[in-house]
Length: 292
Image (cartoon, rainbow, N blue to C red; front, side, top):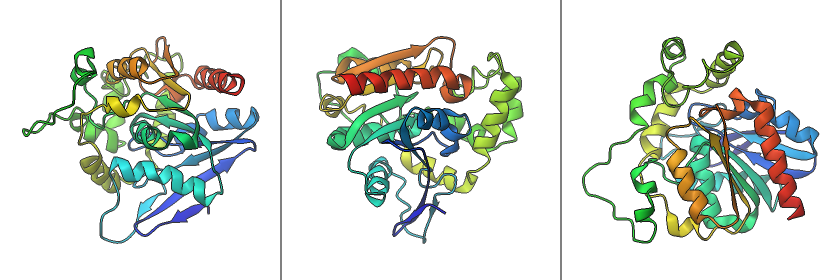
């Protein structure tokens, strides 16, 4: 099996295709099958790319080792991209991210954009506690001040529904919350819910819950660092991805060489809701990168 063993984690990855490398990561409670199960990886490989689908530490088949620090902070998760690339002998690569994995991807781009051929951020933001308030233009040109009182974490209210497969039935019968809010409205709701269940089934709730407690802790969107990203960037999300609309508008304003794409009618799970449409946007961007 394709694993990279570190001192505190064993990281799983899967590879398909040949050509320029695209390293992928995913959202919380998901795994690399967010891209492969939906057919996006196969389409990218067919277009001439080597796609490396990774499971973030604590997700899918990437499991913690030992009883110490599992590395569930954004800096460590971001560094895992370089660790996998180094393990495979890859110098520079495209990075395709989703949601929580996108937060780590943006952190990596802020620190190491020289290693990126491009960053494709789907349905994500640069803060590990996304906030419409701190995405406002008034915060763009002044230092971010971290309050001493705890911030309200918008991810916490959705923790149970994201970890327990049985709650998908309740989500389907209701609004679906901020992350599954457009699955019932999809032309193929049965396929969308089935793929969501399949993808979530691989992760272990205990590990994911521990990851969530440690990862989501900072509402600072890191504006100064975003302005230093030097690689081409795609910022893509669904029109109804309510948690990340404002954070994406912020990033589109401050990241140099960023392309901002909003997919009409879609929510947070863009690869599930419209895999062909999403792949079309990804390949169009990658073509622009190659010819730019």
